[in-house]
Image 1 (cartoon, rainbow, N blue to C red):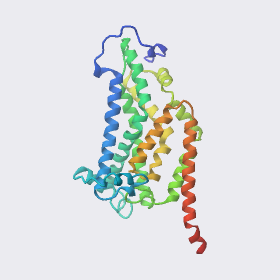
Image 2 (image 1 turned 60 degrees about the vertical axis):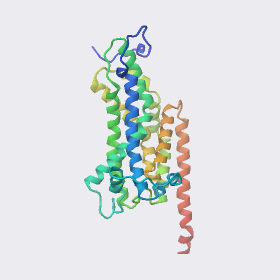
Image 3 (image 1 turned 30 degrees about the vertical axis):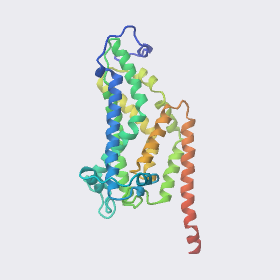
Image 4 (image 1 turned 90 degrees about the vertical axis):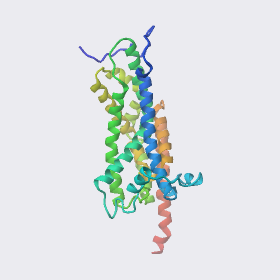
Length: 312
């Protein structure tokens, strides 16, 4: 006998549902987890930016960050934020001194915070879809698993991505493609990243992942389970779909500045909108924009060196 009821009645509200404590309601739990975890991610990143701003201008972190200087300049902080900023933005980071385990762990923590801040909100519709189905099943007296298990599986995939991104950042810094402020040191590199991300928007893998991310209800109705381990695996599967959908856009941060919170917010909004779009036209529009930005960056860099190259 299976514990995965393939029934459409899971999405239909029962008549006369019994009273459920507020804090035990799946939708409330899901919303609380989303707000708290994403909020912690943004808080961590905000402390880092504030610590860097306390040491001087933040405009060097990437396009758009000069806005913080216009709004009042650096906000000096002591302790954690300052130490955090100094640990990963020292002039020798990733270059002459190399990267040790401590530095790599700090980078992984930063990317984990970025994943929570940027990706969890985009997964909101998916997580709430699960919570709504679970709430209906619970009112029918059927066993359910808390959305926390789903979030654990989903976040686990992005935490693994954070480790890979941290190692990649260390390698790029070693190659002098990133400066000590974690911004791109090469317009050609930035342009290539945008072009690569733009091309990926038109790939079959992107299409397969984004179309599944846009339709979470059929996925959960087909694979529904009342086992905690099974729900964690569902979260991991959704995390992998999300990773396949968004990894290229996350890597755009290397082109615009890893600590560029303006672009973090912008890309987070774009990725969230892409997942709730009813067609893939929006995904293709993103690809066109990325390709245009990348072509402009590469063309501008080439033209800037063209007179010097011709004179030589």
